[in-house]
Amino acid sequence: MRDFTIRIATKKDLPGISRFGTPVVKSLKFYNKEHTARNVYELSVKDLKDTFKNYKNSIVIAVAKDGRVVGMCTHYIGHGHVDWLDWILVDQSFREKGVGRALINFAMKDAKKHGCHKIFCDTHPRNKPAFKFFSRMGFRKVGILRKHAFREDQIMWEKPIR
Ligand SMILES: CC(C)(COP(=O)(O)OP(=O)(O)OC[C@H]1O[C@@H](n2cnc3c(N)ncnc32)[C@H](O)[C@@H]1OP(=O)(O)O)[C@@H](O)C(=O)NCCC(=O)NCCS
Image 1 (tube, rainbow, N blue to C red):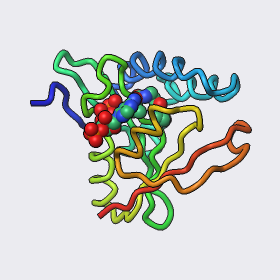
Image 2: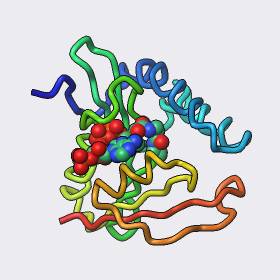
Image 3: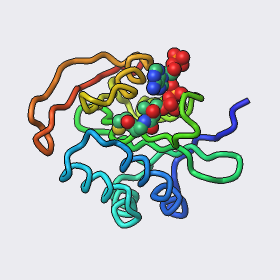
Image 4: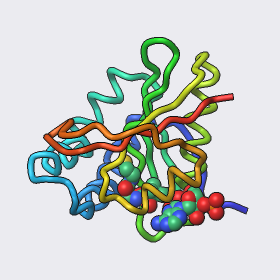
């Protein structure tokens, strides 16, 4: 039995997402200063509210039995039936228990419902756990964008949705 549930976030969940997510993004030390500042902003309640308002159903969360948000991902159905996975974050104490897998599976199911045939995402080249995670999740590394967002290299990943 899982000790968490997966669902689409409501407006009430946004402070809880920010509370758990902000320390997680701050712990990712490989991003440069400008990129880190942007990441922290994206986990603020203010920016989460904008995401919530502008992209319906895009925030998926994992909630523990005690009601705490312990994981989240954001995904956006884009042009040509392709789904973009943006953030995926899991609380340190809940890692390697299947939360990340469940979040992606939920997002992919939703994307499939909307006709998507593919999901894609990026990772920082120094993010070794994420590299292992996306490989295990059946994503294929398709290449590296050099000096991309915030002048940092980005590994690009994709997975077909069947
Ligand atoms: C990457 C991250 C989301 C993974 O979440 P998670 O809940 O721990 O992942 P899961 O438990 O669902 O793991 C799914 C698979 O990946 C593997 N995996 C996950 N993390 C791993 C690690 N650090 N090392 C090796 N394998 C790992 C698991 O063993 C599992 O494989 P299996 O089911 O085939 O046995 C989590 O480590 C995290 O939040 N990291 C910080 C934020 C981040 O870097 N996000 C990605 C970039 S946005």
